[in-house]
Image (tube, rainbow, N blue to C red; front, side, top):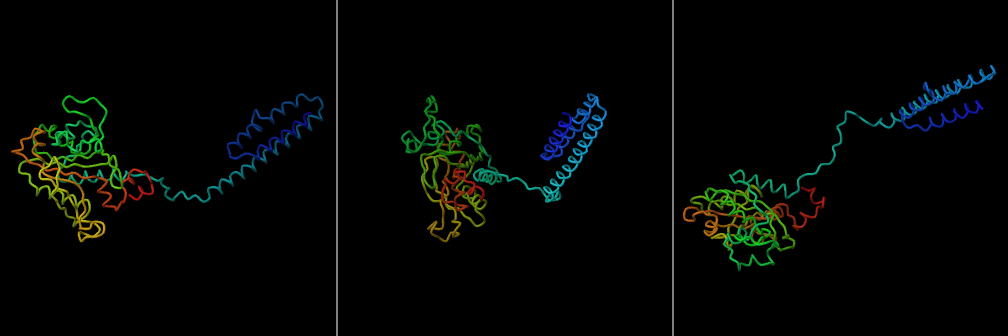
Length: 345
């Protein structure tokens, strides 16, 4: 019975040793078979049960042979594992720099917002934020848009289903950043000078290659004594060259906005033809946004005496500026989260 136990123990040990995959597993087997309380010592303890002296000698001799075989198997397997590990990592050069994981970056629109803020900050404009969900008073009424004005049409504006404010009327998703004009006058308690840059999301019911239901717009507002159109022109020329590059000029075309008088459409030199005229622009100019001198009624709505102070305002879509600078054909590309597009910037 004992010789059979010795034979089975040898076969079990050799099989397990050959299947080990690392040094820890091999050490665990060594302890299991050759440790102080291992299986070999447990069998040695059974010699005392034998009465025949020759059987004791044969049993001890066989058990020592098995012990030696297991020790040799452990040593050989240890060499094999060490060789495999060396082969696996032979290619590794610890002096080489590590491979950095891919990193993302700010979205193109976020980059543009930071750049626009910095450009105007360099000439003293203060960045502010005002509600994107606002009352009718600030979005329309205070900006000289009476109740029947087309901008209030439900096909142009998103109205919010909420109780009317007793003073400020209905709640709307702001159609422009101009709602910040009167709010800024109120914040400063109608005490110019004011040099504001309001940059936020706007919402309109328009959607095509150049319009989306939600877009970003920035609004500049300057109010002080003796403010003239030439000051507006200077700010626009400065921004055009900072954003598009040296040599870009601005042009003011007469237009009509309810909250400015006089009002202008703002054009910048076409980047493709440098103002010579091409298929993209026809005339050498590209329309950028709107501007004008702040209407006296808007100043009065903000509590400012229009006889002592004048101001100008201008606004432009962030997406439009990016589309012109990078020749992006469709505004919806900004919002499709296609990495093939976004990683270009």
